[in-house]
Structures are given as C-alpha cells and as structure tokens.
Image 1: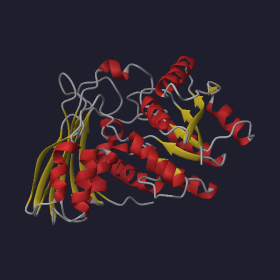
Image 2 (image 1 turned 90 degrees about the vertical axis):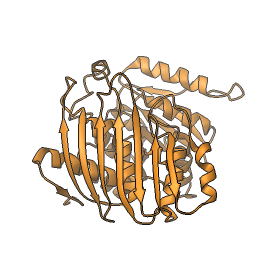
Image 3 (image 1 turned 30 degrees about the horizontal axis):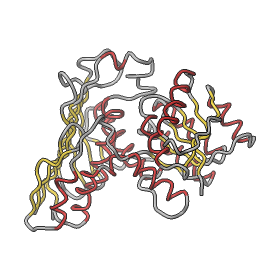
Length: 360
C-alpha cells in the first residue's frame, strides 16, 4: 500500500515530517505541499530532493498550493489523490483544517497541540468519526528511546506504587523567536509555554503515569512581549494517588538547559534529563532486570528539542492506515493531553484547583 501525502505548513517542524516520510519512501510519497509563503514551498521541495537517496527517482511533479481551500477543493474534485493530510501549521488553524480534511474524506494527522480549545478538540474527533476517516495526533516523544524504556518499566510494575512525579522544561525562546511571525505568542493561533513548547511533556505526564485527578496552576508572562505565558508552575494529583509538579519557562539564560521527568516509586526511582529528556541520569530499582542493561544505549544526543521519534511515529501511523497496527496516538488519545492543558489554563485563570475530567 502506498500512501499519498499532503503536507500543510512548511515551517520549522515540517522538516522532521519530510525526513520521516522520505525515510519511508516508497511506502509514503509526498504528493502535495501547502503554505502561504511560496519560498517555503520551494525550500521544502529542495529538502525532499536532498532527503531521498541518489538511487531514488525523485518526482518533482509535487502539487504546490498557497491556499488550503484550493487544495481541499482539488482533492474533493479528485483532481489529485491524497490519502493523508499532515497538518504542521500554526496551532490555532488545526481545528478548521482537520475538519475540512475530514469533510473531504481524507485521513488526517495534526501536529501538537491538536487544538487550543477543548470544544475544538471534541469537534475534530466528531468530524473524523462522522466522515469515517482516521485522525492522528503527533506525539513522537513517546518513541524516544529513553521514554520508551521508562514506559516499559511502569507497564511491568517495577516501580510498584508511584508516589511522586516531576517534570521540568527549562528552555530559552528569545523575543526574536516570537517576532518571526504575527501568530507566535498569541492565544488564538499559538498558545503559551505550556500549550506549545511543553505540550509533549504534558502528554508524557498523562501517558506515563495515567489519568490526572486535579491540577492547580500558576502562569505568568515575565520576560517576553507576548499575549501568552512564558512561565508556569503546576501542582498535580493523579487518580492513582501520586502527587507531582511541573515547572516550565522559556526564559532560561542563555540557552535550553533541561527537559526532564522524574518518577519516584515504591521500588524504583528514575530521572530522565538532558536538554530534552534524552539522557537517563538516575536509574535504580529494588530488583534487577535485563532492561537495566539498556540504560546506556538508550541515551542519545540531540540536534533539536524535537527528539528523534518522528520516523517511528510515521511507521506506526502507516501501519495503522494499513490496519496492521493500533495508532499510538489517535484523536481520542490526543484529547487526553489537551484536556489536561485546558485544565491547567482554567486553574490559572480562575485561581482554583480544577478537577478532571472536564465537563463535556
């Protein structure tokens, strides 16, 4: 089965998607690109060509669009055959673009966060259900070797009862980062340090440990001229009884310092640190396991905080489209971290503890 793919939004993160797709060639073929900036379309075509091996015949006849509605219309009119639309546009555009893809009868994958509003996330899942198309939400960090190894220890019960969980995201985003585009740092199209930069860590808190019972959050805009928060401090309580904290800031001087997750349990303690949870810094359990020998090999170097899980994510998604696998993060799974994020923002805005799940 060959999957014809359209990528919508050719900014920073699209490079990771292009690399993951070309690594899966000819199983997945990029047939269309869409971005309001023509120069980014040209750059993406060049990157696709460079990413494919010399032995691969590169099809330069990729359809290029500067208007998403025009692309959707061509798909609906069967002027172009697309099996999967990958959305890497600004976060606030995800809901309308996902729903339009669903209405055109096309499977769709959206970058994080799937939406910035709870109601929008629910509407996206409903639209895809109604159209009987698949919705995927990108959570590639679940496939990072360090995180995968940690998840397996939790699944095997090596921690026993989990007592405490902490997550820190101490990164640097200068004012120049937000000034690159009008949508950055806005409530409508971007979201703040929690919704955007730390979104994957919020997801991991729920995916690793389980459903969160309640959150109590403080957020502030301390050092950047933006609408949204650049710093947040959060207390959490999980349904399993564990307590935890999350600290996030984009003001770390002078560069990204830490992306970490620590889990303390009845029979084990683990800390995964580095700049983007890429190094296992502490690993102790009351009993030994062959998994302990994998600690050193699980550490990896990073060139960006995106991690290296996109290719594994795409392999899972393509398998799911073929009916050969269960998606690691479909629309309903994506709603779990969106619900937690929205709960954090509600808590900060209202100055109170927010119980989860949110009311529908």
